[in-house]
Length: 456
Ligand SMILES: [Fe+2]
View 1 (cartoon, helix red, strand yellow):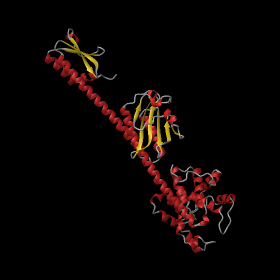
View 2 (cartoon, protein in one colour):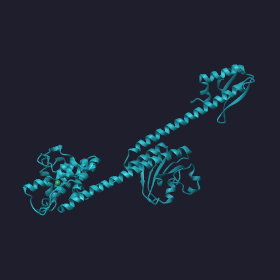
View 3 (spheres, helix red, strand yellow):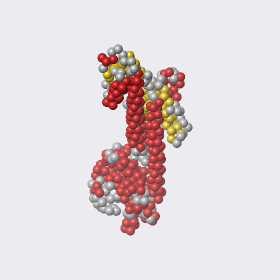
View 4 (cartoon, helix red, strand yellow):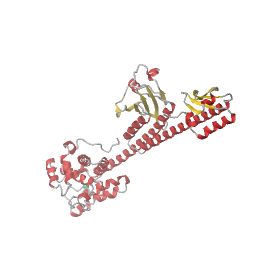
């Protein structure tokens, strides 16, 4: 059991000695008993006929001091020491609370500070704030530019839900507390603004989420049982929300930047198609087939993005091929063919100047390599060829075989599948061919398209 202020005080040798010295000096023996009569100091036998006086802490009697006439000075000394000890303890508790709060904020900041994905920011914010505030419910309500709430992410303790909007004002006030300024409502049922709504929460706190002085949403936490939220709880929630707003802003800026970058990649891909009209929708189909293979091979998510960009840009080097070669309506002679075979190298040279596309280069420069080493430009073999290039090779060849060319008709899909199988393990990576042929047909033929270079 935790010691009382007086017990802690008298346990200190210097404090007990000071009281004893004062008793000796005043020639007044005293004894001190706790509020339940437990002796804490002195000899009761020596002061049997004495008078009593209370010792007070926080307006409450915590002990009784008994002594012969003249014990007032000793009582005053003890009361002074008790006051000092209580102040020190309160200061210690406050310092500890502040330290814990700083630790919580640092931990929260570290978790969301490095997060650039908006969905992940929502997940961390809802999970962490609910845990830190020990709330039954947390809701993150986001507004559009007009200030209307358009998205609600709520966590009732199981997992975060993304609620369909619009919610009516009645539905909002039934489930959440939304206020334009930070506010505590410890008894929602008694608040005239919520009468008749019979909400799920008994007590709640709300604070606006602001970015550059503009309200972009609200954070609401609450409990099903009546709870006494204090001003310091609201201050903590507000500080956490400020950190959350900064993380949101950063993730939104990053998404915008990413979207601009992907738009540039799409523009580059379209430029290739404009240059070589015979390719038609070739690039889009190669991207779709490549992603179907990646899903079947269960490549990690970051490889999908790299593959998607490499597939979109695989023939960008054709920008460096002379018109009379690229647009020739018939078979190429040996010099023209050698020039055309330079396009993977031209592609590498173009992309090496764009730093964020560094990881895309292996897929572009090696998409005409063959697993048996008979490809170009470097005659690489097997897994020396980047996986994105091995995938693009299959997707590119399949689409080339199944597309009409000025000098030949398209093969049927079945004939093209047979060709892929015939050259599996020699020209093509056997596992990639297997993945392509076993991918669900709608994916293989690009009917169902996966998340394509969009910011989520
Ligand atoms: Fe090519």
